[in-house]
Amino acid sequence: MMVKTNNAFQIAAIVVIALLGLSLVVSTTGFGVTKLGTGASDATPICTDSDDGYGANLRGTCSNNNGDFTDYCVSENQLNEYFCMNYNCEVNIVTCGPDRTCVDGRCIFA
Image (cartoon, rainbow, N blue to C red; front, side):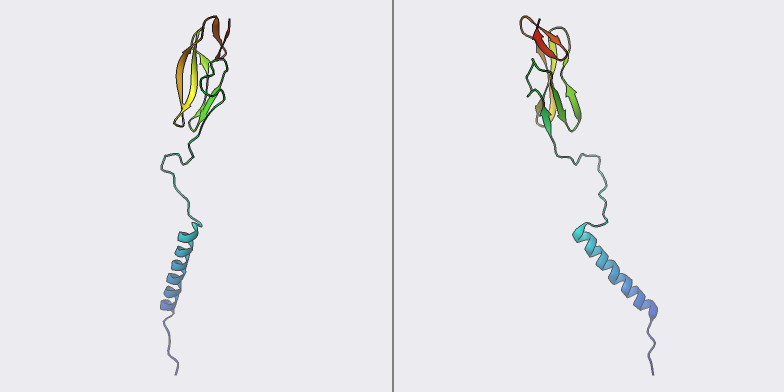
């Protein structure tokens, strides 16, 4: 005489084992998992300045994770000079020296 088995129980057991196996694969490999953003940047902080900061005689561009900032003239003898500090682009107003004028983001001889 044959004993009937409960097919629903066997199917449920197979599904549970499959889900546990899939869960193990996802947790160890990260396969199929999408990281949702939190609004914070996951990028490595960087900062570079093409004129090394205080190169008033050169027009430079400071670049960091927030964008690019290019030196520019505020007046005939003053320059907004960008430089890197703690991975941020900071700015100082630089007064051009005697016999110099600010043109195109740099101090040149007048």
